[in-house]
Length: 402
Image 1 (cartoon, rainbow, N blue to C red):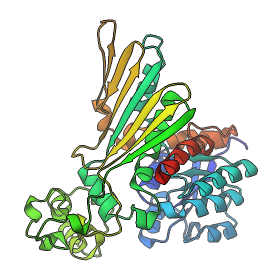
Image 2: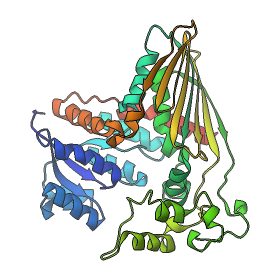
Image 3: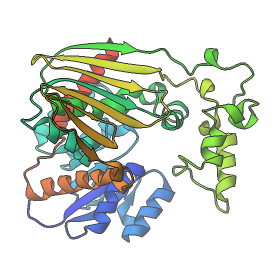
Image 4: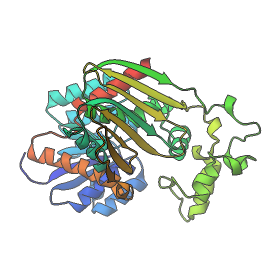
């Protein structure tokens, strides 16, 4: 391919896709958005206006775009997870490279088929595993490669989902077992598994799984609780209150859409009274959230690793403890410390600044930048191609079977 601008189509105009489109808007010398696909007219109109696209560049389906004659080099797929497999295979057969949001697909067979077709067509499928692009996690990786710390002996990595994210996304929201056909652990932590493999290698010898109990069921509901938070006598003291999350604190409301002439508070009250997001967490029967889940890996190299998802934490962060021969490296996404066993001074690295930066401290922009360069230059190499990402996906699938 020549070094002309990469022609990109955006498939699914949700939050994640729009982050990548921000990079294209700022770098139109290297990439051009030529088409958008979404079933939501409002989202289509918003992106069409931002990029001055013609109505002929906006579509409801991939087939409509393929039949339009518009030239496409690559696409960004940010649809709901249940559509990733179908959209990716179609895009590959149309001859497009694919930047695909995690997870790749919903079954091991589907993920393996994506890798097979990517190889068969010679088209890149790169997975949006943000941790490999984030400055904090890159620093952890670099520290483990220092001769001073010695080889890695073990890793303990904990993903604290956070109470608000849990209730909004995985209990009230659509990212649950019933609707997505995949577990919370798979959806949320497949890239955490990938990060740990990035640290320790891919020579997995054995996998052991521990799961907590399901907490958010009607059987566990407090006495007197209502179906909806707006009607609940216990709401004011409930740590999972939708009224508190959305109306009082105004958190997690970016995905809500106001009706014409509706102010923000009226929109939220309507959401609370009419939508899935106003339900009590104990009355969302499609959710499968457990208190925790842990995967323990034993590597043929002798390294041990544990990856834990903590669903009920108040905090939302990741804690990593890496035991090496000569030092222990620990971090909580704010501070990294290297404590040496020989008594030499502790090294401290402050990443508090990264938490305030947009686009996951620039990682989102680096993902799309690297993808565009791979397509433009023809080397078709990124940090997270589907071949590499398949390993972490398969570990998660194996964990679900145990």
